[in-house]
Length: 385
Image (cartoon, rainbow, N blue to C red; front, side):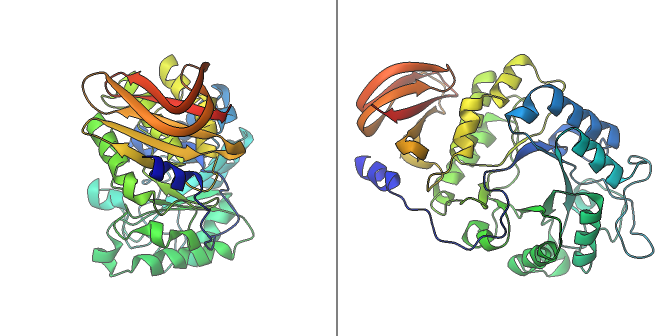
């Protein structure tokens, strides 16, 4: 434990090529998919989400990007080969929608795929053809820029089996098309970790999915946490981030404690933070979770490595991450069904702050401990004492 911590505290930032000069901190925002899926997506939903982000302090807490996921597209391209919005659900068009999002002090994101078919075409019987970017990469990038797009989610969707594409080559092709544009567009790729994008994504994109889709259950959350233990060794850097999928806070069967644990872990991962619930309908507790500025500050603080797992047992885990200013953060995680005493050996003298209680809890020498409720996490910021 002490050896692992000593290595982590001195971990140097990796020297890697960056995709572009964007996303120096993990992007934050809202994505439509977990809220409305495919056929529930329309411009009214997106405008309402932008209004809610602006009026509920989420924008001011850092949630800047409003991203429309799959199913915004018309069933076919225009005669000139350009993408179009579905005329029934997006009668004002995408450029007008982007303008509205921008008017709320936010930035606008959109969804596309490198192959011939989107995920919704395969999984949701979305009635379309030819709306993938295969063979249209430069045209689509230019279209997005002309509409005022600030963020692109580029989703794999079986492009290997459908179209025989290579992951690195296909994602690089869109990277190159975006790089030609006068408009900066944050580039998020999603191939679910199959091709180990954490080993090559830094030179291609600003974030890369590391896992399959996250579900709104405790079992899914803890499974993804376990997967990040090995991925974290290929840490993100300013401008390129490991992405364990969008947040499920407020969804499914997750309890308040599970939501806080989920959010704590995504923060220590330096993960992109994208809410996927109607921001106008969040309860007070869920909104307090998502807008906890002390926890968000951990997510946005990169001091050489994302969080690393320092210890693990059958039902408990200890994760740690260095922060700027010689500070350190620890998450004591209890995945089990009974309360547990969890300790971490942290050499030195520290002033300890509980980031969920927003309280300084005293000082510690060499060890921090807490009794952690089941399906919960304690998040402690340590400052040199």
